[in-house]
Image 1 (cartoon, rainbow, N blue to C red):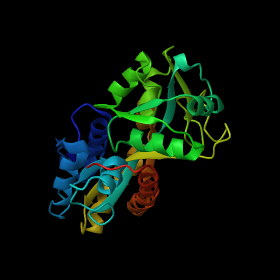
Image 2: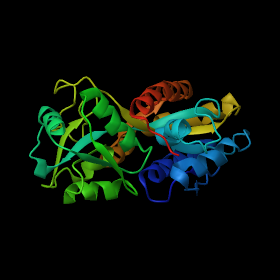
Image 3: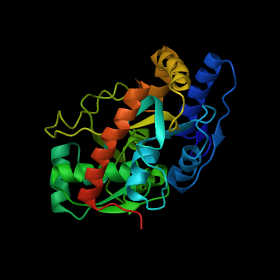
Length: 286
């Protein structure tokens, strides 16, 4: 199992849980190999070019499997054609986190603040989920702000806390939900997150928005459907377990199983959604 990020991060933790479940089911070890680089493109490229014999799989997310092919001219794999979906294992809801010094505590107040001030927002980098999410938020509210890319979401969160930037739209802001320097004013979702029940949705506040990230497992295009089914089945059981749910919720995520066909479908759907965000905001890596 190729993981396109460093050990110890969210993607790596989820990947190892999935690898253990598949291994226990098929009766042979699933070895996780971390292949970080270029925002996940290095690992994804290796996986897309691997033999489709069922012995190489890839643990990615919507950044590697949807966003990077849309904005990065160096990407040689195709979002839809290069992989077969095995399953998704978790969703990542995006939250709006605002520097408390703005005095903003709800979305109406924040949209007004955006219209009256020159505001900066941060992300984990150009083309990151946070970059796309913030631009989606700005497009839907008709507001404007300047993007400041950082090396990773943690650095961007730190910048909000210090007042270097005013806001961020990213799952990472929940790590500081109890920090008095951060106001988490909304989640861009149809429903509240069970781990953060006091954060209202954007829809509750009168803004009809919905966007999320996800994590999933893929095989190179043309992999035997029986092999894919054999790996997908134990993941469904894993994701339904209380232990998995508890661990994932503590990470600020939501457990979410999608079948192979449903995984392919969400890649196709998100390709359309994120293409629109890219075009509206003019996002590209040059």
